[in-house]
Length: 185
Image (cartoon, rainbow, N blue to C red):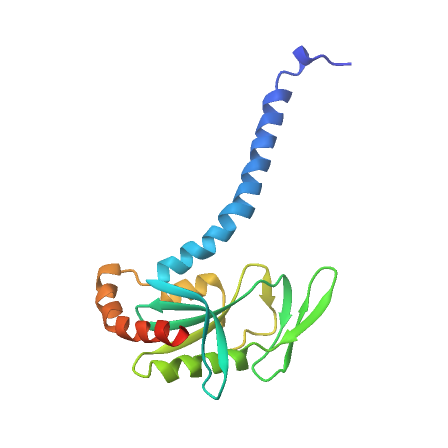
């Protein structure tokens, strides 16, 4: 039987293990959620969440996130999916195969096209784009459908390295941004 005096390295090793575990939990659960918001703040100058506007056809349509970027308006639908995703532009339902289950969900592209049309109906002179953002944990093994992206791809496409120059573009979009806000009221 060994005594504590013979293994002085056990206590520091245990302390390091506990600190690593705490860092992992902090990074996974606290920084992960903030990472999305931080990256969205990097590409956008303003945003509206849970926006309800008149539909292009009739009735109303809900937009999860509308972001004012230096390239125009960006409609973002966020999917938190873990597993392999099988989907294409022409498939009615997409399938997710996770570790212990398999499920389907409707192809999100047609609804996104409807949202884009509804926003374009309000702001005709401003570019309007839409993306379906799949967060970490989703993998497309058979090809990535149109309008689908990762967070890194979204930042690469809509990020603006020169924020000062972008402010001039944003000022041109501001009156149209206010039209969207009024349409939602």
